[in-house]
Image (cartoon, rainbow, N blue to C red):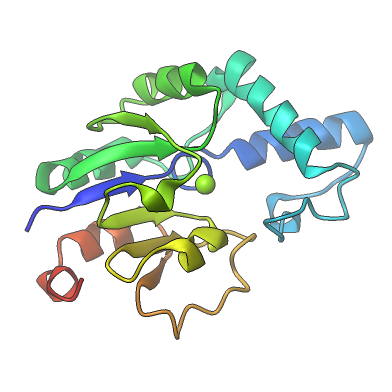
Length: 187
Ligand SMILES: [Mg+2]
């Protein structure tokens, strides 16, 4: 069975949070880490910053410093190639600075079908979403499934009672799930 898969960018492929935290520490003389970004809907109090300001600064990073944004894992392009062999994997992002995202994907050799911008991902026609957003979990209809990529900002979400959410810790697990007949037959 070949699926239509929506692959998120930030927090799954691209580690913009690391770049952000490093810049923040340089500017404020702090020693915060990515682990300190432990909330999702508002920016953590430890950072002197609103959600809007975080979005503005990270938009700027996608525009001007996309080349400095690391991948979340090593050899992520090999795992993406493997997923593309079996499924139709589109990149779906809510980030408006999409030119930077496009250049970043190319630079990192990441294969995909289409690059889609959407602020309402759950309404799109995908069977599986690979995403770090804890909000998407409650937005998805029951015929869709989310592989929730573990990050500090979603760690406290208990997915054990969510029948259409599976927590994954890394791309090896993602590849394993999307090649497993037991998993695919249960969707
Ligand atoms: Mg994300």
